[in-house]
Each structure stands twice: as structure tokens, then as C-alpha cells.
Length: 113
Image (cartoon, rainbow, N blue to C red; front, side, top):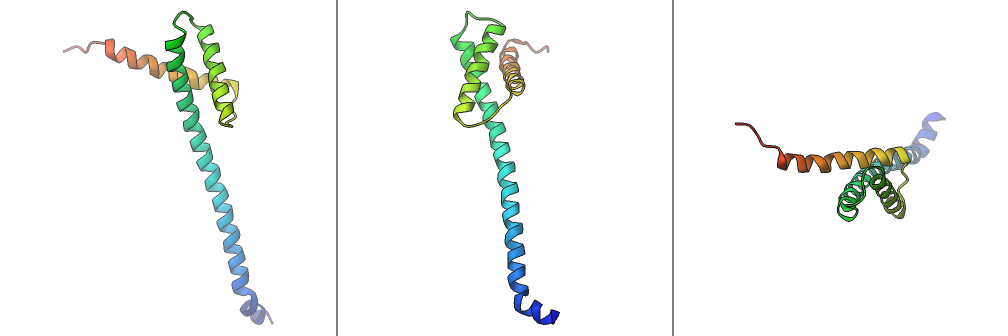
């Protein structure tokens, strides 16, 4: 009885299980890919915003520049449909600013011989 059931429906059940596993793997990989792309997009947007703010708002300093950067970055990310918390956005902007400042410091630091 069991052998007859397996011989009649075994391949169909196997195909259904394999299809379910493939679908689940597809969802997992899509989620990981989306997370990776969103992180890269967030970093790129913050880097662009920092460079733009440094050029556009030369007369502003400190918290005023940060507020402009937060506003611009959150708006750009919102247009792309990417959700970001205020803390995460601030950290990304600070990291982009540190990278921006390091680029200028490397040009001005003289290496001793």
C-alpha cells in the first residue's frame, strides 16, 4: 500500500517539496540582496550629501550643516523608498564626513623621510 502510494505520488511530492525549497531560498536571497543594496545606497547617498553640503553651505558650521545633511539625505532616501532611522542616518553622515575629512588630511600631511 505505502509502496504503491510512493510510486504513484512520490515524484509529485518530491517536485512540490523542491519547488517550496527553491521558492524559500529565492525569498532569502532576495532579502539579503535588498539589504546589501540598500546599505550601499545609504552610504552612497550620505557620501554625496556630505560632499554637496560642504560645497553649498560654506557659511554654516557644526549642527546647522548636520541638520541640512540629515534633511537632504532623509529626503533622498525616502524618494528611493529606503527606510532609515534618525540614528542610523546620523551615523552614516558622520562616517561619510570622517572619510571626507580624511581625504583632505592625506593631502596636507607631509610624510617624514
